[in-house]
Length: 449
Ligand SMILES: *Cc1c(COP(=O)(O)O)cnc(C)c1O
Image 1: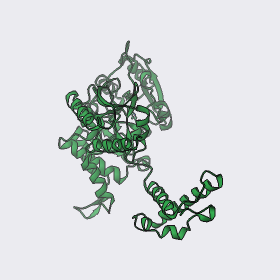
Image 2 (image 1 turned 120 degrees about the vertical axis):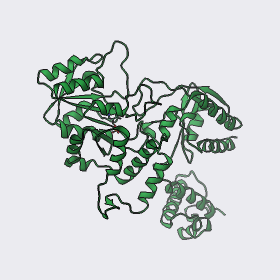
Image 3 (image 1 turned 90 degrees about the vertical axis):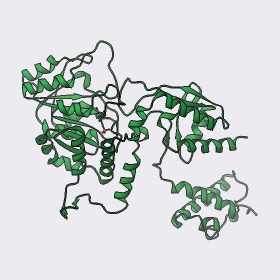
């Protein structure tokens, strides 16, 4: 029986003693917090007149359980990426490979040999394992890793070019996103920015003039990762810049941005190996085309990398053990010829994408109006600008309603609305995601009047 008013509210101890709550498997403190919240809600509703009678203990327990389950879910949670953008910065960029995810779990659930050399039984270096793999994969003399590529750029310039003039093309003074602006980071590093060329055209002779006049002692090439200048354009590329730098005995540094280890799936991107052959130091992200964890990777001449590594700033920007474990496993995947998930997604061909979209549509068609459509996508994460990827999607209606429902599902599903349809692009689906989508949609259908 529902009580009359405030006095009818279930007592806290009675509520907490109910079997649904004692047997729910959630921590007691969490359930108590939820119970307090449920009772407070009911009290406010009674006072406001939006509720006529106090809830029964059973009703209050059901609401408590609902609130407790919501409190038990972390805010940062897995989602299904159905946007078709493999390196979606808002969705965490690259998903880790099974080997990398397992490495993180194995290394963090207990102790690990982070800075311990098991052969010698003595203190060891923390980055030696990934440095060895990076050198093997790219042919670089020296390698080092930091927290992200923004940190790698800052560290590279702070150590190698403080007080020096650094020539950079006006077409490469870019903002990468998240307020990372090349001119600002250069200023912070103590390097002197020497702009050469124009926004659309910069010639090798522009760099040569900056070196000859004494204005610059180093060259910086920044890979324009999230935009493309089209039309009447010209830029000096790494091979010619490398030759110029050698001739003039100037440093050539390169922020490669994405860093493709293998040209295969990434049309038109310069490979890391090629950049390492041309530039003195190269840096790029761990979670773009490499397909690993957030990290900044520095490769180059042994003496320059050694200077970078021993700088106090390197310690402040160092990579943590979770990322080191994931990065080592990702590099082992590349070594063993296994493409990390994001790289495999980028290389997926049109025919197999179409087949998967048709299979998804077969699964979803009994649940809502659904058709298969072609929808071009992009790489994302500031990679492969201007490259349109072939894409196939299941297109669902009603778009707005489904978009909202999917976004709030236990495992949120993120698609995109286009021309009145909710598109679920299959390129970025991981194993098991189709079942998540179908389960969510079955619930939605069940809730329809
Ligand atoms: C993405 C990018 C960065 C920043 O890398 P993070 O790993 O996100 O810090 C810097 N420079 C270029 C050219 C980039 O593309």
